[in-house]
Length: 266
Image (tube, rainbow, N blue to C red):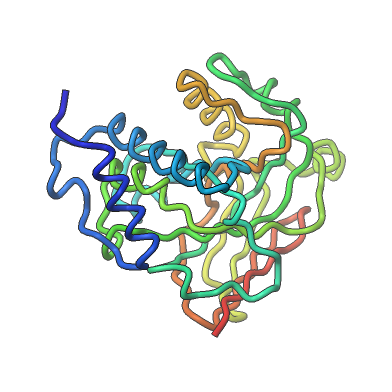
């Protein structure tokens, strides 16, 4: 039992969203804060957003790659909720002032054709539940000042979720296989304003993006959360996250999936 108050933390984070003003790390004032406390805080915010009329359209798995764990100073994955108003159209300007300190990371997005409920979801279950795959860019942001986060801080902050841009050409797992491609080895090149800033492959996400999907289903299942048909699942970045600013254009090109571009308004 800790002295941490999830409702108070949730109110502080919700105010940071509204004001676009970051707060001090929650763990600075609450060193006994646990991951359970943090997820309780995250879910309290999701309830508020739902009461405001927003809907959950998917989930993200964060911190799945060694490079992202090193970059953020954590040692295990986490998950967050993707709300309907987090999705941006490709190539349409994203309001940069919507975010506090945005960064972008390329991901291999899944869209589900059937629901997944853990625990005991297997790799075979996960593959059979995938409708199609899309290239994507996730905008991560932190309501914690200067990204000085521990694992509980980022979990409480909805896994540092910000926004999502999806590519528009769906590809099935079978089509990738027929082309001799594997989700694990699928390569990606990340560009910012035309310059290469990162490269990676699908295996950066827990060895395979499918493993991240399995981890997610089995982690949220015992909490009463089902990954619903039609949900978008982001399984984790294949490169380190890169900072962006007003006017930035970010493109990720994936072998076999094509490209996706996010443009930030000036």
